[in-house]
Amino acid sequence: MDEEQRAIVLHARDNVATALMGLEEGSTLSLKVGDRVMAVTLTRAVPFGHKFSLAEIERGGQVIKYGDVIGIATNAIHPGDYVHIHNVASSRGGGQGTGGEV
Amino acid sequence: MSFLGFRRSDGSVGVRNYIGIISTVSCANDLSWWIHNQIKGTAPFLHQAGCSQMKVDLNDTARTLISVGKNPNLAGVLLVSLGCEGVPVDLVEEGIAKSGKPVKRVVIQRAGATSALKEGLELANEMVAETVMATREEFDDSYLVIGVKCGASDTTSGLAANPAIGATCDLVIDRGGTCVFGETTEFMGAEHILARRAISPEVAHRIFEIVDRLEKRVIARGGDMRGGQPTAGNIAGGLTTIEEKSLGAISKGGTKPIRKVYEYGDRVEGRGLFIVDSPGREPEFLTALAAAGVQIVLFSTGLGAPQGFPFMPVIKVTGNPITFTRLQEHIDIFVDLARSGVSNLQSTAQTIYQEVLEVASGRRTKAEILGYGNFPGLNTLGPVI
Image 1 (tube, chains in turn orange, red):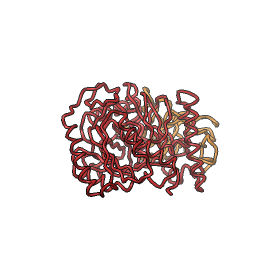
Image 2 (image 1 turned 90 degrees about the vertical axis):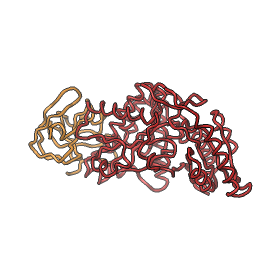
Image 3 (image 1 turned 180 degrees about the vertical axis):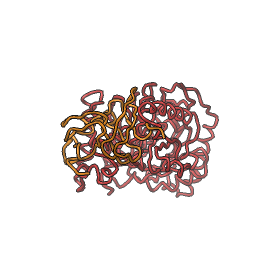
Image 4 (image 1 turned 120 degrees about the vertical axis):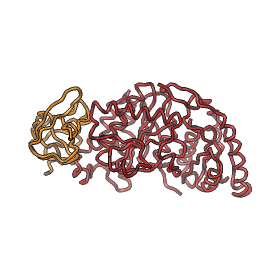
């Protein structure tokens, strides 16, 4: 299967991609982000439907999917890092996705 | 680009040419169904409202029935009434007739259901006979009014079908047409993002307002829609925050500016992207879209929702390959997740748009072929009394 089919980037502004199948730690993926193609190597396994980072996102930085902010990084996130409730919190408050373990 | 539709005297364009058999009250549903079953070329509209409701709800019901009757896919309307129902049938009849289409009425309490059946069959027969010579004319695609909806969603909905439908909505609006979305429940958590797309502070305020009043109704019943969001199941599926969940749902509305927020049962006027305040459940929301004047619905599904609507074609779109294989009789379009992505989303949208034009010109959807979707609902807010 073509590498770019293993994950999807939904908007050119996004700094995360979504896995279309279970992806192993150390996998290198080639991803289309708008007009450019970028390579990312996963620092951890990422399950189907879950996200990984395409960029350096500093603590407090915005995590972007669908071209919009889905939350704020609670730790520094590096390219290829698994992105979920352990490192992202809702910017809305109210206990969503805050500091959980995965 | 263009499609072949039916010109209506109020300036709108239909993509179907039915005589609507509209029940004014739940007591008239059976007779409406009998008439529809006998006369080809009719479409029923049945519901559970129309009586024993608060005055404000009866008014909302009347307004919704008028808007449903004015839908451009109906060439004329036969109202089926009990006689003593609370909903003001005279107003409904006058309201629909203002659009210039023929409106007739039968009343059960005049001489019983079998007598009203005979009269209803004769009227429906005559009305359909007047429509059969109507021919489709070519219209610019800027006359399209498309509704969007999702149901029985799964992980693929937010990754493939919803974004693909959203890109199609953008295309419809770029071509000068109109898109309508709603399902207010799904805005929760992303209403601040939607509000940024409002064309004015007033429209932004309305977006917050419809979410806020829905949330207050939920709280009044002892519920809590935000606290448990995203759910444990959502988190296990990869959704991290409520914003992400809501963005996945509202991505089917595309990215264009939001021009106005309408109430449930209102007819949408003008071109561009609009919101209709409505619950997300299929029967009630599809009725809201029909009332808004929508000709065709793009419906995203993951696990496979079968619903169509009696006179408004519903195109089912899925990103789930298993659902597409298993439910061929229900699903019109498969969006291949493995081949989507930002750039391919545009070409997928072109494919969906082409299907919209074909359906607008008369090609039947899977739900129309199957005849699935004859039992919509009509939403009101107060108690049944």
